[in-house]
Amino acid sequence: MSTHAYESAAALRPRHPAPTGLRALAERFELAGDPGTGAGPEVVGVSVDSGDVAAGELFIALPGMRTHGAQFAAQAVAAGAVAVLTDTEGARIVRREAPGVPVLTHPDPRAMAGPLAAEVHHHPARGLTTTAVTGTNGKTTTAYFVHAILSAHLGGCMIAGTVELRVGDLAVESPRTTVEAPVLQRLMALALEEGVGGASLEASSHAIVLHRLDGTVVDVAGFTNLQRDHLDFHQTMEDYLEAKAALFTPQHARRGVVCVDDQWGQALAARVRDAGLIEVDRLRAYPGQAQTDWWVTDAEVSMTDAATTFVLHGPQGELITASCPLPGLVNVQNAALALVMTIRAGVPADTAVAALAAAHDIPGRMQRVCQRDGVRGTCIVDFAHTPDALELTLTAVRQITPGRLIIVFGSDGDRDEGKRPMLGEVAARLADVLVVTDENPRSEDPGSIRAAVLEGVRSVRPDLVDVEEVTTWRGDAVCRGVELCGPEDTVIVTGKGHEPFLEAAGEFIRYNDAPVMRQAVADKWGRS
Image 1 (tube, rainbow, N blue to C red):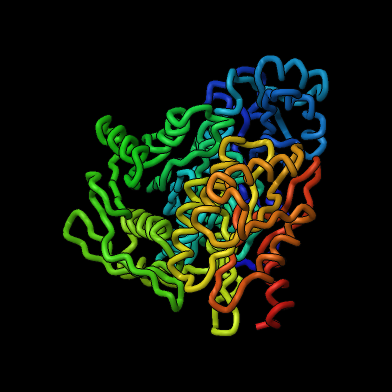
Image 2 (tube, helix red, strand yellow):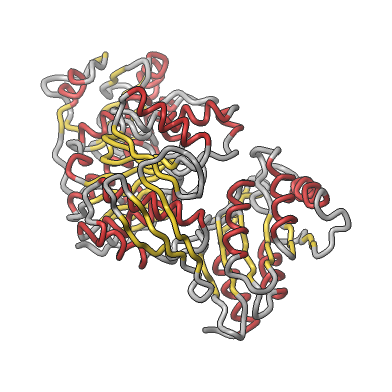
């Protein structure tokens, strides 16, 4: 296994590609245009980003809201692109900007990116055990649980999601929850080269709509839940579900596992089963009446190690006792989903259970920076950034907190404004002490965002008792939360989780909650 360290996803490419002639690609996908003489140039990869093109690759120039990607054709050719695929408008631009390069056209070049990249890399997903998890909350935690289980079973697994792109020992920060289709295909091709046997993927609704998973059929797709988020993109919850549902079709998955703890999961499972699209297992992690194939009972949180034990029941009488290394039913749902997904992918239940129990320290997901030891309190970083997720998270943390529950939180700028007072209301209702701060203001006035959050706080606490507003810097708010934390208390910082940057006024400022909290703990209690 290689142990190279890379700073950028651009370097995560297979080192021994097998070329494909451009003419063969044009004929296979019925692309118009001129692939050149003979077999045409040899293609070893695909890219939709002119700044991410490597020698021998096909550059796919996509139409954008402001600028057509074809405007960057010359840059792509200078970087080594041997041909360009675009639409009719883009072809005219390419012939002007980069004369002489072979140009192919298709009415929807974005939809072709995944299938073309899969073909160029010789369909790497077929050589891997693959999973993809979608849903509003829990994708990252579930994907890491799956990664741990598949790694134990197969000896290695890649992960591509919100936090990182990791192939064996090769890892970089992830630019988004689901990378563009050509990047995903080359990551899987690299996994095969590295002798990695599995792939654990996160599938965002944006990615599904934007064809980033096209060209990949995973062995098992999983669904966590659907909660209020991304309505600036999807407009309605029904549209949001429609995007998720596209993952549970033969074009993207061989079978599925759907959590039916909410109405949206129930609707999705019924839709897939009634249509006979793919085989799907229903999973219920919370007490309820929903019809199901797998269900959880006897969930118990340990105050000592913040883990949760539970029993998973299966359709053939399976009785699986498991331990989730994170507290709360919300994480039991993630853990149970990972178990069922991997069992359906061929992992023995005992292997899955053992690997799950050891899968702790997921970046920004109930990440324990400091755990109570009789001298100091518990300090946690979590990504919860929607009202439903925050309610579940605070409920889970309350179970492991004998003293006060302190929360440091805020809300995003340039995103769903309606959730800001809702976050404030949830925090005021479920936590004891609130420290309101900034999250990612982006282009908005940070004070206006905090005011909207505090509006929700006032609906529960009109006098703002035990509520502080930190107007300077998020790191100051994190330090204040740790300062307030006593030996029996828990302080949790929510909203950013793993994120390596804070976005404000057009700047991306290097920042992560965990090291700031770790330093605050060291300053208060001394280093561990």
